[in-house]
Image (cartoon, rainbow, N blue to C red; front, side, top):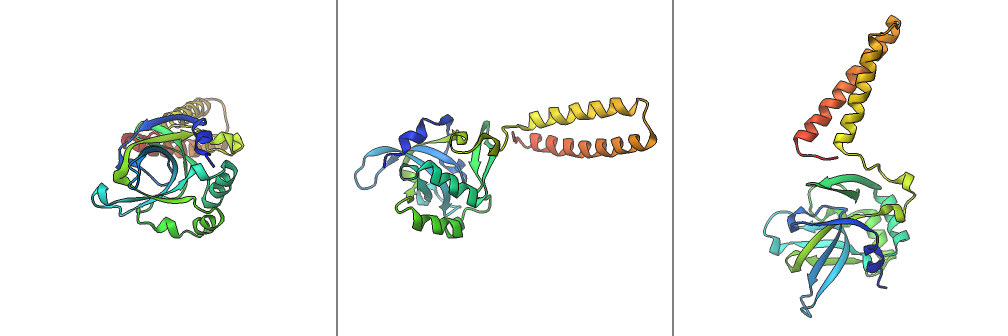
Amino acid sequence: MGLAASYRTKFLKRELIRRNMIRRGDMIIGKYKSAKSGQIKYKVSLVLDWVPFRGAINERKLYVFDLDLLYPQVLKRLIKKVGGLEFTNTGEFTYHRVKFGEGIRDGSIAFNKFIRDFIQEVQGVWKTYTLKNYKEINLVDFDYGTIFNPNELPPRITILDKLNEVEEEMGEIEGEITGEITEDQQKKLRVRLDKLGVQKEKLLRRKAQGKLT
């Protein structure tokens, strides 16, 4: 079909990553060397899983959907069935990712009912690649706004953005508490302030862990 070229025009950005940094739901583009022909071609793929999770990279197989064979509107339908999208990060790279799950990479995603049904519906889209044959892999921030209504996408908000919003609201509440308000209003504001304080601590912990989103 040759649909990969169309997907590539909708890349917002991409970043070179190590093979052990791949996550379920990632869209990647990689230089892949065919074991049969020896030719190296670019492969645009949606990552489902890999096996085995532990052990040498040379022994691992990567399960993907080949986006060269998958129309965007069909991909949209699959994403809605499996759980939608999330805004996340790998290192300093932020992007939208399909929510296939974050459990142990053990191949179990392959037995997800929606995945099984989907494979039967779209013949040939399922591929198994040998990780050692990837000569280069780039993680992609795909513009899912080209296939979804922008209002359906998770907002691109980082932890710093959230912290700024929380601190701004906390400052406003602290100003209100010192003003002329009733005891009942003051009590409600203090409850809200406590909740914001808890939220701020959680965000600070995530930030300390190196999380961006």
